[in-house]
Image 1 (cartoon, helix red, strand yellow):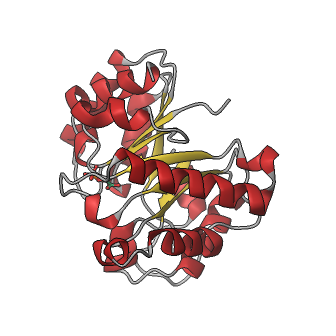
Image 2 (cartoon, helix red, strand yellow; image 1 turned 135 degrees about the horizontal axis):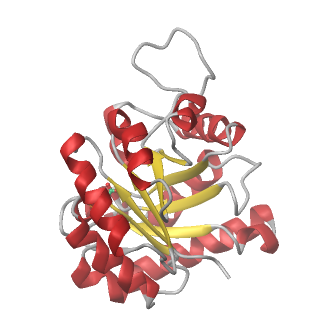
Length: 249
Ligand code: PEP
């Protein structure tokens, strides 16, 4: 059985004052039935890791460089993230693919760097609205999966997040049939590539405007093993009911 995962992506939001939300979340979920991961901005990583110490919440980063060290001003290596207290890193988020022109090959190289430091890579993929309307969704996510996920992926080191670009931060959510179609497709692709034993253990998250009000129906879809949540992960009062819904799914 795959242990479910509720992951929060704070994006470029949060200062020291936001650590109170983390403390609140930790108190609400001292012994959760699912994994909980919060990915704050890099400036908060070490303070966030301290804030959750001894509790059940894991801390992740939102990106890493593919190289271990060197002349890359402004970038952070996987080793640095681990040193700051991260146990996971989001890679290939559509905002990074768009804002920083990140390619599948770069995402794959970053995932390999994350694995080398024993960080879990949460690898994001998803189609644009144009691609969905052109009927290209499965081709796009299949190609991203093939090119972004390293051959060395395992159930322990890799989580895949399906995030339709048009659903992120927009309040728009695909139909449950559309979510189910993509998640079933991704599971099948993983089985073909890695074999059933590895593929059956890799968690597939849905991401894109998940809120307390729609989490229940999304978590009931086959092959949805949790969510990657942006806006609704910033406040414990919003994220907590999503976690509870996942625990009861
Ligand atoms: C995200 O940033 O990965 C995301 C899914 O954002 P939101 O939940 O705000 O749509």
